[in-house]
Image (cartoon, rainbow, N blue to C red; front, side, top):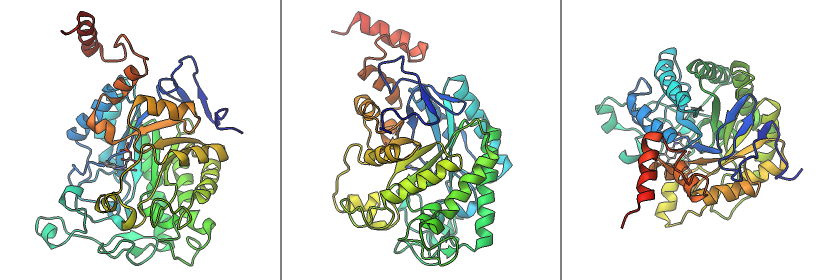
Length: 401
Ligand SMILES: Cc1cc2nc3c(=O)[nH]c(=O)nc-3n(C[C@H](O)[C@H](O)[C@H](O)COP(=O)(O)O)c2cc1C
């Protein structure tokens, strides 16, 4: 099977010359275009994890700005798994109502609503990024933000200087798997169309997948089957609590990139990701959301900055391509995808089915609409809200000296 003739559960509408602005059907859900706002934690809520008006206005801009699908930041499934005291949650029923109001707004705009389920595992109990991203300490405790002990696949630090996590017992793993299922059911009540599971970036599920972090000797550790077990159980629990009609996405760190950008063989590998993707597909997952890295401090973005390493455009796209080519599952590419022509080229080359854009949307909330103009898809400003587009099109016709 070549990447280009791959449709798996997804059916495409090829009426448009642009793939980025063509629809995609997965299960009973039709993605209006291929642009997805990447999940981005904002660390802006109260400790009760409630989605606020701030989050509403922040995310609504991207729906107005041309993302066919807007994904929430990682919503925490259990308060022990909060990255910071600013994380949004979906661990209780009170958290459903503000999310539902937001989902209703997206649907009124013709935009799909996606949510991400998250547990930070060993990276829990941290300062907000702009406060240092280090472990919570006495200074934060004196402000009412006391640290707590994170949980992980195993006892012991995965990142130097961070809090020592405690390995989950098999009973606690079962409870956690149930918590993912319950969270998915709440997301369904809120009306979300898509759920994405965060199993990347050194957080809880990645701490089980990667041999760098997981040194357990029981059924949840050891060989690849043991290390994948919790991720597969989470996928099954979500599928059991999430309508058959709606897609499930799974975000993975496709490789650990443990030592440096050119080392592919250490830790979790792309070959492991291919095996995982096939197993996830069997359990009802529809799309692999292909990220990378994060299992240790040495491959974090902070470390890039310290070593003056540069990011490269589309650096994770080859993983989305390989998984799409070698498995019967669709993929979403993410990471330094900066403009419409780049996103279009990825789709045209059969490297992915969907394109997630994060930071570039932060710099330009109308990224999707500008991508349409760059690709010549919207010469008349007709994708813009009419109350913007009518005036902007008129100004263009008049011209500016
Ligand atoms: C502010 C910020 C918060 C993020 N939070 C999350 C998150 O909640 N879940 C997640 O899977 N990735 C998170 N990421 C990673 C993004 O989803 C994305 O993979 C990454 O930024 C690379 O894409 P980009 O180059 O388009 O920004 C975050 C990134 C940023 C910049």
